[in-house]
Length: 113
Length: 112
Image 1 (cartoon, chains in turn orange, blue):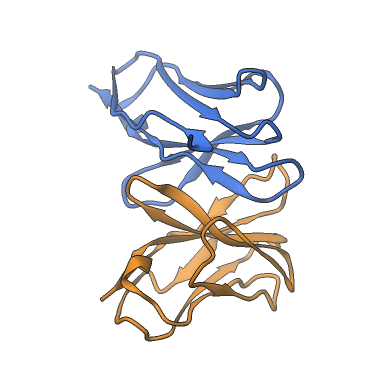
Image 2 (cartoon, rainbow over the protein chains, first blue to last red):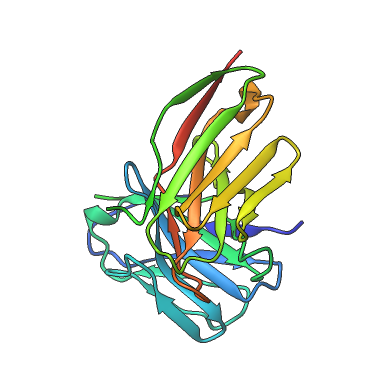
């Protein structure tokens, strides 16, 4: 089954404790992206990657890091999480076809205390 | 001015009616336009994409794009209670980019 997976799905952590949210896709998509979704602010793009070793900032990259060492994986790293990073995070991938249609993972709900 | 604007709703329509959802965008260079549906607590799923001026129909859904006026709309015919969800409008930022800007979504309620 073609899918984007994220782990963990739920995470409670404390300020300053480094964490990684994994994202993996099995569709051989070149493009991957991370979003956060907050009430009243909608989905905002954090980082995206056009291919292996090629990444670029979205609209809200501060406090986040990403890497793309393999085509299928695109982890999101919070080196020192803060409460304002409490949010619902989505990973997405795209082949670039259909206008750049993205397929989203199930989401990771993060609470930073 | 937000880059992509949608009325937050809720938009309430009776079952069987046409629901009309609207979205305006500010970047004239935007090339691809998407409508996603998001049920509460779930991830967005694609309804339609459009990149040429005019209408594009897929089953009960019709997307309309007017680049001169910078708006894109989604019509849902014969609305069903299962269509009740939040509808997100998304556009690509500039031309030839993979930066996406999403609206905050319009909540649709279809009343049985």
